[in-house]
Image (cartoon, rainbow, N blue to C red; front, side, top):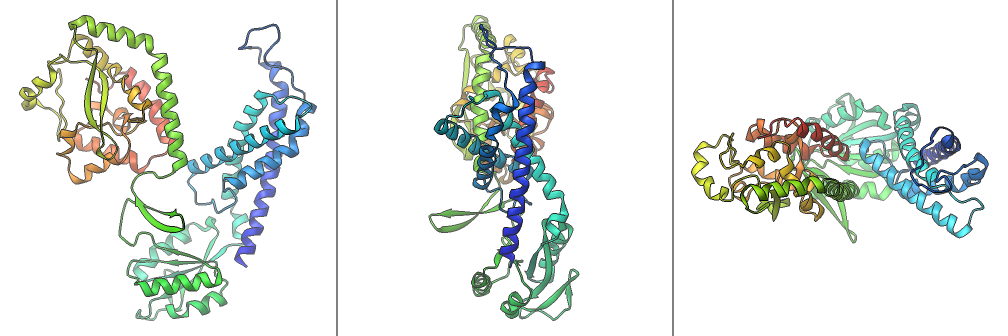
Length: 480
């Protein structure tokens, strides 16, 4: 019954998406038809304008192919599975992937069939962007439209002790828009009899599980708590599997407060993994793509300025232009980080004599008005120009545009245990520390800001930090 209901909802969503895709197609086509009327600029010089006239009737025949392609792309992207509790930015990434698949299919069909009218590149790009954002926004509206889900809710059965099941029941009751209806709770065999638990009726002891599954049309069973032995886990799992009911268990049975649980498959061998760092391979791949494109663009655009800075450093004292230092990267892996040299050639040798003047708490070393800094060094440090060679580290994959700053290995050996977790993500050029005061924050605050970044990472956060870093650097806030 539950599977039939889920299938019915899936088809309703497909019809909803067909209407959305067709509507967005018509809007994009109307936009492309009117574009030459109000966009007079032409990026490609020539006898004929690059932005050709496209009429509504030229491309309207693509509508069936677009609908089929985009619905297939959404199906391939897993957008007809249960997405209601998926994080908003992850949902957007799934729509990007689905639209890319659909766009690729449309181009293949165009190549095989050879449509009478050549596809407009501006139309394809416009529709790709509008369909991605439009489908994402429409799906978010659909999630918020509770009436759709509340008509056919999934019956939930919880199993556990009161002190462990009640907090979970409270969460489910707060989110009625998830389409989950709690019908009852089963208690352990040695648990005292009670009629209710967290406002939910207690249906008996665990041994009644097969009977309750057949009587109550249960769609999902949640096993809460941490005290279950192997035989009970096996009994619940086998009973649910036998009748096709989804079985879920509390992934917090180890009492971890930060780690997120994820089931991974190794050629049929299921593994439950706990990680404190982001594990979304698609989002991390996009992050790496942003790193490569951003670092390459930064090196190309700033090349004249960097050449001038290199010349000034060389002219000041005749020493080397770059300063390379061993740093600790992801999981403590060592690599050589590159900077423009902003200190005297013998700066490292002088460090031992200056240790007593260290103004930074913890293992880090920082002195205001450091005597080792050269004249040109003060300027390039103030505006972070000395950091630009690190774009090369980003380009080769040793660093990222955004991430915790890479520490010196001698500092890492003095870290407290909780501070070691900042090494669990690839180091970066900028992070929360960079936009919240740079050198004006103490060491512990710096470490906690890095951990805050790791715990709350998303592509949107990276984009926000990149945008906030630019004015922070221009204003030279907290720089020394």
